[in-house]
Image (cartoon, rainbow, N blue to C red; front, side):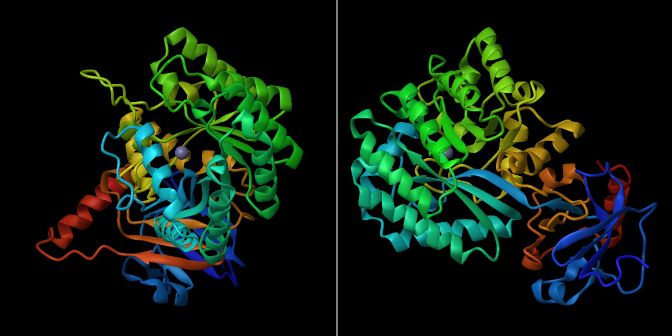
Length: 453
Ligand SMILES: [Zn+2]
């Protein structure tokens, strides 16, 4: 008898990150995986309810499920977001589509946002992301201390309240973006120390936008080491190949022993550099142990705005970084705000953008992209016990697809999300109209499943 007394058992589960194409029987007890067993063949057993027709209430009532070959992934880790700015687009536009106009326009309107407005935007964005299958989010926060301490503190308070409200569905890490200005270092240090004591998780920033980038990076490390917190900096979100704060960032990571606890987002200018300089920096990144995050949607939208003809698209050298051994994650960045008018916190959409922008579409590349949405950002976020394995917390999403490729071909709307010891979301596509004959549909699915990734 399998998984006796389990809270949840499922058969005919496809685990593209754990076993190439095979089917599995899995069980969960007390919110943790207890068994992951490979099946010889698809099985049909009494008492296992096909998941296809189930909504949230039925899921919660059914202890035994037949996934009928559908894909199960560990909960996505969206490791670079801006939840506090999400859905602000109707209030803040961006006519030129440049990063600088987005920053200016947001700064102009930010003082008018009430704490409750910011909090509600974070709650909405976090719950939407969770409904698409994300289990852990890392959000940067806008804290322009140089424009006023109260304004910056409003965002910290809103963020902490929002995190509490969504804690039953999703975990959030916060990395405020401290804007280093040597003329106001004391105020900034006091504010940052208070934010860290209040419960934000790490030190963020965007040194390439600050007047003294090298000093700003050194300041970030003084703060991070004092509080023993990780660092996650926006690095070189620019088309200009001369912009390379990553060079000094790597030096500081080595000097402070921050391998595995430092992350660099964007790295756009790296894609514009001459090959030998890019090679030098990529090798340095691999040696110093920094994690990289690519944000393809936002880079495609904001970068290359002054180019004509062969427009630079800003997406970093994903394949080269990965081949050098740098852990590379892909993430959402901004959602429906002046930095990015689209996006919805759906990591499948981010994965598809990454597959296009980084030329990652062979069968083995598809699995690599899935790892960029799951295991690699989990490592960058410092999550322990992540993944579908006995003893680990069971946070996962089941998607209406029978192969890794089909995830990106269909971007299935139909998904079921389990996290924190319970089913948290069920979304089902309801389509009316002329469908393919049921027999034809089943035959096509079976034929594809036989050779699935
Ligand atoms: Zn960002």
